[in-house]
Image (cartoon, rainbow, N blue to C red):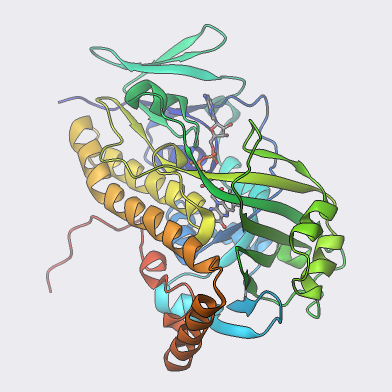
Length: 404
Ligand SMILES: Cc1cc2nc3c(=O)[nH]c(=O)nc-3n(C[C@H](O)[C@H](O)[C@H](O)COP(=O)(O)OP(=O)(O)OC[C@H]3O[C@@H](n4cnc5c(N)ncnc54)[C@H](O)[C@@H]3O)c2cc1C
């Protein structure tokens, strides 16, 4: 049996940082190797659904959400043109009761701070662009573009959708452009929330061929916009590029005036091509495994990419911690617990995208009637119907159920 004493992580995204925290808590020697020269803040919001908040709780970090987060009252499904409510799923209070954790909006940079702060500088090696990962007889090896290499008992590729670790292990296949593009912007609201313009909700504005999501981050001092459209013409080599508020406003010409007012306040706007991949049957080759977007990149329509990366991280660290003398058993347990879950979320995110972007007026009418009826019967079973996503607890899944 092979013992795990030293773990190397490729990539300091949300998944890599969460894994380093979880391994450190188990006194396992861990180091992250990140290609960026510094960990800068990407201007974007993240919805931390209750399952993601439970990961932060498992890492002992959820108390910091009070400093940075915004707790929305409800998910509001709205008609993108008239602004009429299609459904309302209560969140504040309801999530704590139903899923044992709140639903929190946060700036991605603030989540990075929460996950980065507990780590020592010596645990993160910056400017290390990984070009190859391989297994040798008694260790795994990662090689970097500066000619250096490192060895570890276990290497984890947490290097995102264009993962070098995945390419080394499973071959080169490009992620699939999903014919979806989106604009992202964090709009400053320095004076705090303006509830006449942006309610204290997670608002999803539905329209033909696209939807827009708006919500507060930074305790109400900024509003995150994600505006998605179906489009076949993604020309860029990079998967995100600079855009303008004018381009954003033009793309949603005729949508609700409140949206246009929010767009007009945006300083920095980025445009993204949305890519994903099909689910994999295995993420592991011998002493190397994958997590997060490297293993299962997904469309953002259930807001689960970072959540899944963090869930992977906590489960992997738990399995390694519990079976430190048996790496193979730990990795088998990791895959058994995580692959079915990540696959279901990946495929459900695709389905939700189709529902959000219906073009035919009849199909949209039927969808909205269905939402309204469900909302009358049980608001929690309305909208995204994502209770099965939120109830998951990566800190306890896989533990034997105690006998009664
Ligand atoms: C529009 C949009 C909205 C989203 N909204 C949400 C949301 O509300 N909630 C949510 O949970 N998720 C959301 N996501 C998804 C989420 O952002 C990602 O799924 C998540 O960040 C993945 O985390 P990760 O750690 O796997 O990868 P990443 O965060 O991509 O991190 C990968 C890291 O690896 C580094 N790296 C890459 N290649 C190398 C290399 N060769 N060598 C060394 N380092 C390398 C990168 O620099 C980076 O730091 C959204 C995504 C999009 C596009």
